[in-house]
Length: 215
Ligand SMILES: C[C@@]1(CC(=O)O)C2=NC(=C\c3[nH]c(c(CCC(=O)O)c3CC(=O)O)Cc3[nH]c(c(CC(=O)O)c3CCC(=O)O)/C=C3\N/C(=C\2)[C@@H](CCC(=O)O)[C@]3(C)CC(=O)O)/[C@H]1CCC(=O)O
Ligand SMILES: NC(=O)c1ccc[n+]([C@@H]2O[C@H](COP(=O)([O-])OP(=O)(O)OC[C@H]3O[C@@H](n4cnc5c(N)ncnc54)[C@H](O)[C@@H]3O)[C@@H](O)[C@H]2O)c1
Image (cartoon, helix red, strand yellow):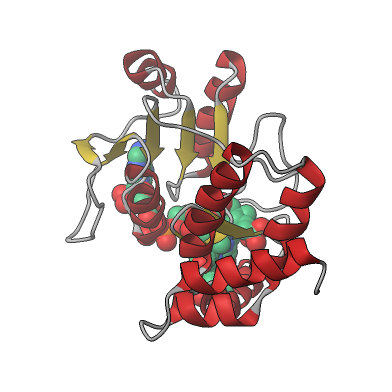
């Protein structure tokens, strides 16, 4: 398996199963795209902005739900493995991506794993064990969370600096060295994480030093 970052905006995601797992996936996906959850019950779980449709399709009814919503991705999170099998089958027939929550062993073409993710602005880190140990993915995600503090702000700052250095006609090699020095500089990170110092000023100092060949 290879991790790819997928833009699902404008698409529909169809989740079968309104238990704790269906709810967790729906909350995550509803932040990105229209998400519809089909289930006979939802208890009082949090589904984020997902639309809830009360129904309990049998294996033969599943294809009709694909035709109704034309999803780009389907999630099989019911506790009925015959229904989950039918969801995988319908997805494969239509070339739709499918995430199966009740099986981490053999996978079918088009199957996707939902990784543990940490986000800070435009920066995301995704952790997967290829399905072998979700508890380990969660633990590593918790450890990495603090590490990513300020990364979104660093992405914004260096995107601006790249554009400014381009406009100022610096060579690609000079730009690369300057930006590499900024993302590695502890004082810039410190400034991004606290309100005491101005990160732009720190970055400008690093760039000047790099261009002078001080580093
Ligand atoms: C990362 C995360 C994302 C998310 O779901 O949002 C996620 N599972 C999370 C938590 C978690 N899940 C489970 C536990 C209990 C401890 C344990 O069993 O390890 C814990 C931990 C806990 O709850 O503490 C149980 C479990 N999970 C799966 C099975 C079925 C099986 O293994 O057959 C069973 C057994 C059910 C049973 O025994 O009945 C299957 C999958 N779970 C995946 C993802 C995919 C593989 C990811 C990878 O490659 O690592 C995969 C294959 C399919 C999928 O769902 O995409 C999310 C953490 C989010 C976060 O906090 O960051
Ligand atoms: N991926 C994970 O992290 C993870 C974690 C725990 C369990 N699991 C597995 O994923 C499955 C779902 O986990 P859960 O804890 O949410 O289970 P659960 O049993 O609490 O919930 C299953 C949901 O599916 C609904 N459902 C049943 N038949 C349906 C149908 N025909 N159509 C639509 N919905 C239907 C049920 O009403 C219920 O809301 C379990 O079978 C379990 O093996 C996965």
